[in-house]
Amino acid sequence: MVSTTHPVSKVAIVTGAARGIGAAISARLARDGFAVAVLDLDEAACAKTVEAVEKEGGRALAVGCDVSDSAQVDAGVARVATELGAPTVLVNNAGIIRDNLVFKMTDQDFDSVIGVHLRGAFLMARAVQRHQTAAGWGRIVNLSSSAALGNRGQSNYSSAKAGLMGLTKTLAIELGPFGVTVNCVAPGFIATEMTEATAERMGISFEEFTERYAKAIPVRRGGRPEDIAQAVSFFVREEAGFVNGQILYVAGGPKG
Ligand code: NAP
Image (cartoon, rainbow, N blue to C red; front, side, top):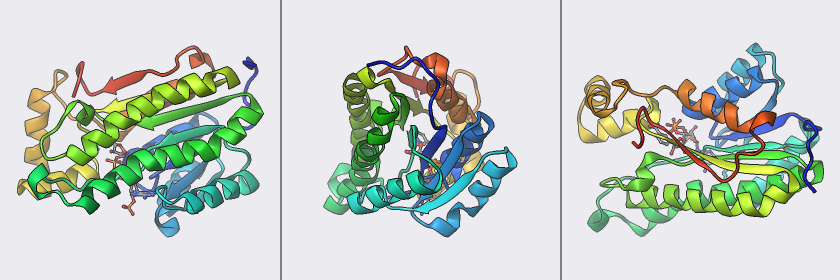
């Protein structure tokens, strides 16, 4: 049955929230009135984001958890439910890159990227949907990428990000009847440590890297983590309840 009431519990989990886009999403959701579970591999590394959430007036909980490990995911989500409240919002943002051209890509680099992005999002969604369906309300937002359309040197990453689009649409169909919407934000170039690492791998400064990208982006600038947080904030709000199974490119143009 579809619930039209407000969420019983305004508790969000953001994965990969220690820095970058996840940190910006956490602060934004706190401003929107959510308590935020700041989940990342290293619990201690979440301290700065916890502080930012609290500065926005939100309650926060740091949770150390590897999203690709099913036992850690189940324990982490259970801890959030006990210590912060039943989670009704999930933002699957955790990610890694292990770029290489296909002839040099190892089995492990392929598997670990799929493991964090795709398997991680599946495991988190499976654990959190129990609380969402019980509440009759929920929101899941998956972080895909314009790389889903293809990107040289990223056969692992673009496969994972395209997979997330399929996962989004299927979960939207399965969970919609329980008042849970599932959508996808696909960022283009965003300035974070992840893109800094790419510039380093290419042997150019981050300034030069950003400038090159900006020239090709219709709005002529690189993206900021806050640009993505803004899109996530839209999808999780009550009024967005009829938007389900959609992909929103946030890339300064129609695609990355
Ligand atoms: P980032 O700065 O590298 O941050 C990613 C965070 O995820 C890190 O704190 C990282 O922890 C954490 N993480 C990695 N593996 C994890 C795991 N197994 N379990 C839990 N946490 C884990 O990346 P970002 O640029 O903010 O990107 C965030 C998301 O947006 C990613 O899904 C990325 O693919 C997507 N995206 C980014 C861009 C961009 O231009 N930046 C574009 C499109 C899409 P450690 O530091 O310990 O590794």
